[in-house]
Image (cartoon, one colour):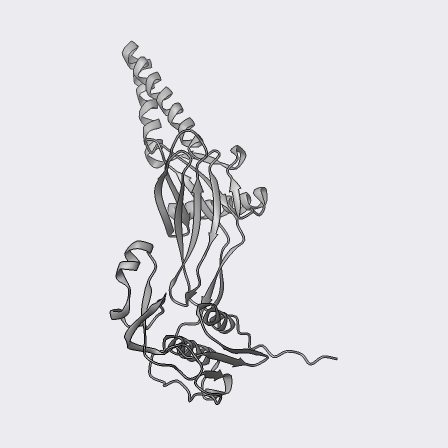
Length: 326
C-alpha cells in the first residue's frame, strides 16, 4: 500500500515538474531552482535518532548529550548542502542513440560534464526501472552514461524523461532533477529467422563489391540479430563496447532487388521482418541492394549507409491507406 502511494506521489511530482520546467534542450546546465532534495530512509532514521537524543538530553539535563546532538545536527546540514551542490552546475547533454532491432535494448548516450573545481561523485541516471551509474566526474571531465530502454515494436522509441540524482555524501539525502529532452531512437523490425533464401538476382550484370566468403578479410560491420557468433570481432568489442562482425571476401556478388510483392502470403509485420533478414544477408554477401516498397523505392546501392537507409524505410513503413487526391 505504502509503496503504491509513494509511486503515485512520485508520478504526480514528475508531472508537476514537467509543467514547471517545460521542455529541455539537448544540452543543459542544472540550475538551483530545478534541483530537489529530500532525506532518504537512512536520513529519516538519522533525524529520528537525533531527535530522540535531544529529548533525552532535555530530560536528564546532559550537557554532553546536547553537544553531541547539536554536532550531529550540524553534520546533517552540511551533508545536505554538499548533496545539493553535487548536482548544481553539472551539464547534461544527449549524444545520440544508435538504431537497434525490436526486442533489443535502446541505449541513449548521455554525457555528464563537470566544469567546477571539485569533483562530482556518485552521479546516477534513472528512467523507470532502468539506471546507469553511479559514476564520479572529475573536475573538467565528462563521463558518458548509457541509459537503456526496452523496445518491443519497430519505429521510434522516445526517452521523454529521466532523472539525474545523487546521494553523496553519506546517503542521508537524495538530490535529483528531472530532464525532459526530445530524444528518440530508431527501432528496426526484428529480423526473421534464417531459412528463406535470397530472391534471384535482377538482370544487369554482376556489379557489386566482393561477396562474403572465407578467403580474405574485407572489414567489419555492426552485428545484427542472427549473425554467426564465430565471426564476432571480440577484440574490437573489448575496445569499443560495440558488437562488430568480421566480413570476408571471395569474388563478386550479383545485385539483389527486394520487392514488397515477393511475400504475398505474409502480413505486414512478417513481411517487414523477412525483408530485414534479406537486407542483412544481401549486405553480408556483398551484393548491391535495392528495395521496392509501396509508394517508395530505394535504388541499388552498397555500404553501411545504404543498408541503414533500407532498414530505416522498413522501420518507418506505414501501410495506412492514403486518401486519393481530390
